[in-house]
Image 1 (cartoon, one colour):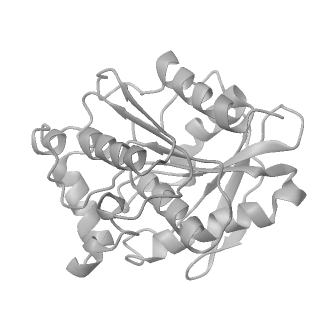
Image 2 (cartoon, helix red, strand yellow):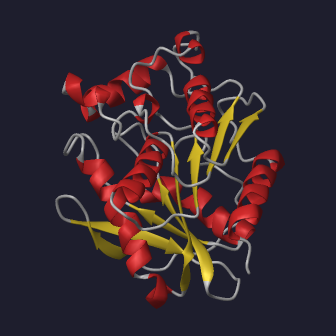
Length: 271
């Protein structure tokens, strides 16, 4: 479990039984956490982390449950194809299929389709960013926001924060490199914007973005650089660098929750 997926246990919402959606190569599980707020509610499709090679619906469960309870939004956590099963583009096609499923089933689930969002942690942050691109490029579904938490966006791993990170740091260069080797075994794929959002030259028209990282995260600089690119292109973007945290602690401090709540309040507040 990533430190970005840990949160305090007192805020929790029980999930519904797993749903199924059609992904790139077959059916995949999707777990839903429902808030106490009256329907229709906003919904965020939240992709777990794990560096493309690990992670699960159970790993992301604490964060998903806390988001539903604290923010009064529905949270859908889809499984997706890990690189050990299939490499790019399987996972990103799964991600797009998941947000499409959420939009198509919004009425049944009593969600507000106009307040559909996408989010993800590390590799899931990559998938969330790419799903936002695919939604723009393929004519929908419309997204109200994208939330990228310590996203893995640059397979070159050449940023200053990555190059100077300790070898045993979470999201270290060695760990990220292993994930990218499995996910992008063909060198040419590392230039594709759906694999490497940091290299995308066409970001205008994307959903408003919140990018969260931490002072001591090796992924910090690439995340902030992507945020700057979005801002330059006219995409409403908030970049929040949280204070340094120890590897054994979770990032979801009051400061993190406040940043997230403020961002959502401006985008998906109940009419």
